[in-house]
Length: 206
Image (tube, rainbow, N blue to C red; front, side):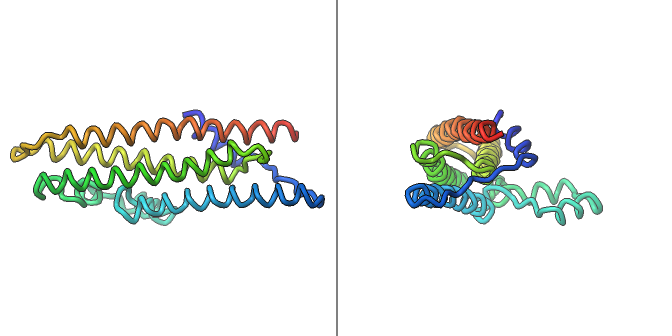
């Protein structure tokens, strides 16, 4: 995805919005800052919710990475820490597992939709002359979390569907996953537009 690669390169770029001391322009800048804060706040909350709800696992940061490199991780540990394992896709009643996947998929889709609305509000505001690096990167982090959650839900559905005692039609679950995938696809386009806006503004300044 173009926006993800651009998001990495944004770390190397500098540039801040210039605040004018003219009263009218100051009000515009204040309005813009509020929208940017709303987007970053919504993105952060979505990422935290994805971890807290168990849709994705926490990366553990640099400390977690160092521990994995030093001590390694067994396949049993990795499997026990998946979304599928956490909701009991291999041992809980299939009806309960499917209901959980549907509920979590709906929540993840709605949450990403809320974040995307904040991003689109920033893009569509005619008074907004810039999108900051923090805006772009925070939105892309939320998009990545959504993609990870989608894969988690798919994997859990695959595990429960493979069970011998599974005799329930998964069409309703498939429909929810397809709807979530559509929201993710739209978010990719929004992320690209947001990245393009940031790049265009900073090119004009240089």
